[in-house]
Image (cartoon, rainbow, N blue to C red; front, side, top):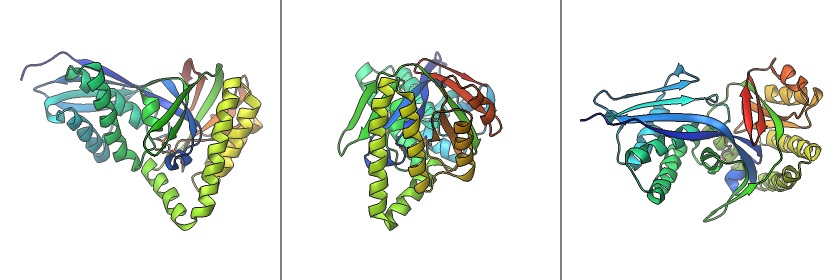
Length: 310
Ligand code: PMV
């Protein structure tokens, strides 16, 4: 086998501002891609193998990730034992910031380039490959992470019966703060726990999902207009509804409350919950960052344009 040139693919992380979990059941949600996420480098090699790192520090690769990657590569008729692969993540893993979709998108885009596909076939296969990989991590993904991983600003997202409804949202720059409060259980577990609760209490969960969907719609309008107090108020209400689905935790609740006390206009968990991150609408209130440092790693993002971790 001859060594080939190395190709590079990129994928992006995301923040869900409104609507996680209800989005799995067809309700609208709002998210924003981050400007960083994952960079994958791939080449055909006689010395195959793959490594993953976070900001250049090596990460261990578990069986689930191995399965996800081999399913992803199979879409391109590729095998991991013929490739040298390295993925570097710039967002934390398993924190609700979309690291799995960012990694899958970076790898799939790299694989499409290795195969020299034309743009339209590449797009189709990348979509299919990321979907296959996300199914391993999420069980029943809504597709919102996958959409964000392709890289764009704010957008509203709804999964219809046979089509995705995606609308880009023009949102003024604003500073958001994310704190990683606790390790998070796998997204598939949290999605399954909501599904189990829905089996038992279908009517009340339908109304919770409807309320979350309506918050996401009103939140999209408030974001567009830069009405940050309104955005914050809707985030707080979204958090109460997420807690009623059993996906918050005492630590997440405490961190949200501390962020509000420090001046955030609103705060909620972001992603699948059970642990992971909270998102606070912080604006110029830098005391929010300080107070959240007591809970874990803090990241500050001016979205949709820039981001800084600290
Ligand atoms: O990937 P996470 O952990 O940010 O969760 C994604 C959001 C969920 O709504 C919980 C699942 C989904 O597929 O939309």
